[in-house]
Image (cartoon, rainbow, N blue to C red; front, side):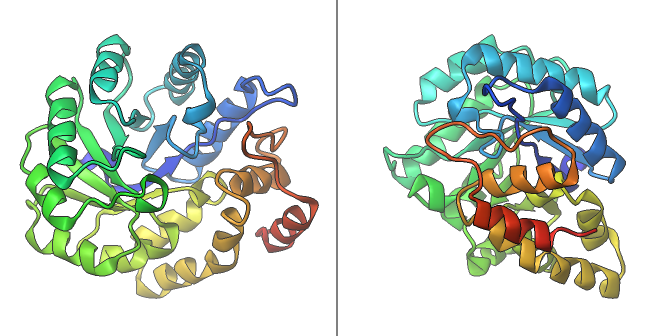
Length: 286
């Protein structure tokens, strides 16, 4: 699955002041990240505030992403939840024209067993017309997918990789040591992109790449010196992105860059405080 190697960007969903989707800003953002060298797009993930979008809005955002992308890079669709049958129904109702894969977060809130997680993902992969990438982020789901669970799922013919955001490098190493050679280990944490790449990872699905895509292209594809320099360059900004929740920070950074018109988010998130906005402004590369 070369389509999902390198730098993927977890796109924000820009909003106008009245909280309607800002499609001109979305088009500008997509052109910005593609010009910066990202290898693929991820629409309607957590960073895209999918939890607060209606079904109609999701369909319109996906259609717009396909249109604005114009087939230039592969497009992955965020499609996850904690009700397996509901997700299967959603897969069956989704128009996958222009979509190369699904990114699906591990079930949250109901905290299934590892066997339940395996059964959930196998059911989704069986139903999906496109390849599936697992997403482990225990900080949000309160349920970690163990390395053994990931490895069990890695042999399903329609499961091609995992976005690992556990922050546990030992767990990542356990996956890398035993995964099939064509399975993708993708960093779900911008700061851990370089360490995960060093143990066999194949890229990142990044938040910061919305704003600084070229830095991640250098981080992943540059020589050792330039790659390390790019990795260190995101240290200051990265923490600010999550100080008041994601995508609060990245939207504010994109506003400072002039890529989007507002940094509006939807409740229960609030847009960046004045103090955070000033810190982001001062840390923004000129």
